[in-house]
Length: 325
Ligand SMILES: Cc1ncc(C[n+]2csc(CCOP(=O)(O)OP(=O)(O)O)c2C)c(N)n1
Ligand SMILES: [Mg+2]
Image (cartoon, rainbow, N blue to C red; front, side, top):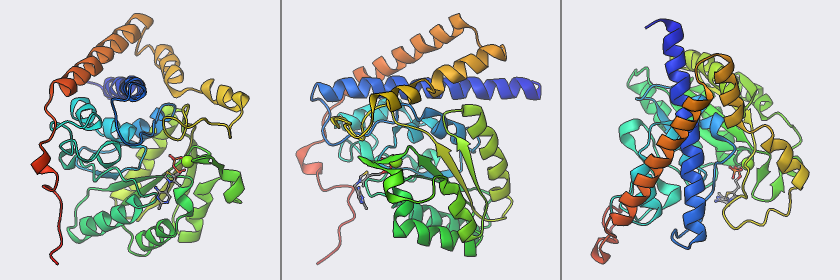
């Protein structure tokens, strides 16, 4: 295969993952509205190019830490939609045996150190993992996803500073979707480009259009090369937008219809389809075929989850680290 063929293979795989996130989450929304999913669910619809653009530049044995909005990161890193769906439906075959729900999905076999319901908490975990990799003299790296609101958490500043002074192999990825729940970024932060903060820690920071897969992927590739070569952390800020509310049920009264429409016109999936057609990697009938295949894969995941048993009552405390006394 030529380098160009390999690139095209990677772009096709990335496109499939972006569509998989969109279709998986659209189904999750439907199931949630039928009262079949318990606990809050935060959808990633609209932000697919960030997770997929970043993870396409990583190796399978690289690590990631995720957030409360984690389904996209999990699929982008190669997660299994059957086990994800089973987890969301509280079934024993789920990633956390049905006891964790949306915000705790973890898959160590593909480097996912966990989604996390505590805003900003993935950052110190990533720095700890980065420190361990450095001690082991490994060439693996850790990618830490966090939001624009998380960027104002004390733990995030401390983690970035430590990663800097120890030259740790951590790629920080700030998903700037302009809101933390209902609070606009401009109400709580004076800088508009959060990548500028990297300078204050002493490492490079770059802002990209997070709705453009190619821009996210190419920039991440360069950053990963630097991080993997032992030159310390970097910060990538991806500007993006969630099409849905903060979580399912959010009435979204804090955003104007015009703003939402404007961002929907910048939807990363049609943009990628257009670019792949222009590059002659895909045509319209192949796009329809991929969508149909993924619809079927998600249908099967739902069937698998519904057919799976619930965890038994006496298993409620198993798999927990319990402290004595
Ligand atoms: C430490 C902590 N503080 C507050 C919350 C409540 N909370 C959940 S999500 C969220 C906003 C997060 O916004 P951002 O980091 O921008 O991520 P986004 O939801 O936009 O992806 C808040 C404040 C929490 N879960 N953890
Ligand atoms: Mg946000």
